[in-house]
Image (tube, rainbow, N blue to C red; front, top):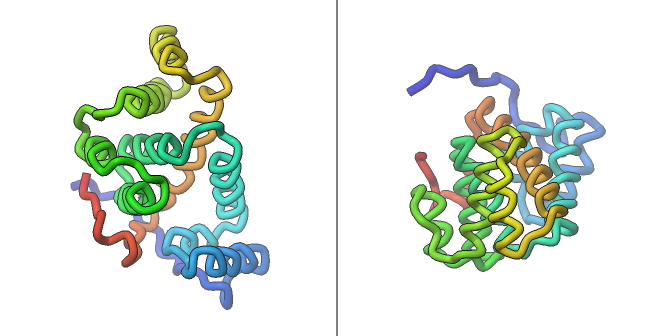
Length: 189
């Protein structure tokens, strides 16, 4: 086990957060019925919380990926980053909202072969982009395009990596506790 630094900042609520973060936390409670622990931690930096929420929403609304494909990208990047919080949260979202087949989610969680060719292609490409730090090989891109994706999708994977880097790194720094609704899909890595 590594001995990494953990921030000592306390999670924020709409009552004690910076005035810039308060409306974001209130909106989260209104739309999700709760303020996820990750959001409460991100609220220590209103700019970070705002950037995360805006990028996440843009990816969800405008990426051109299906909800299942979006979840596969988020899970793949979170696994690559070793984020226990996002692996649990996105596994639950995959199971309950994005309708990712459980065997696909479990394959990503376990690091095994994904039993759906198109979802495997998006996961493989997201991993290639992550591991190459945005310098994929021609063959990586061609395989992604051959699977039915476009160069626009390449850029949307960059957006997803950016969003997940914000959340994954912040979760590492806070050692964010997995919220109860996500605990059934806890992941140890």
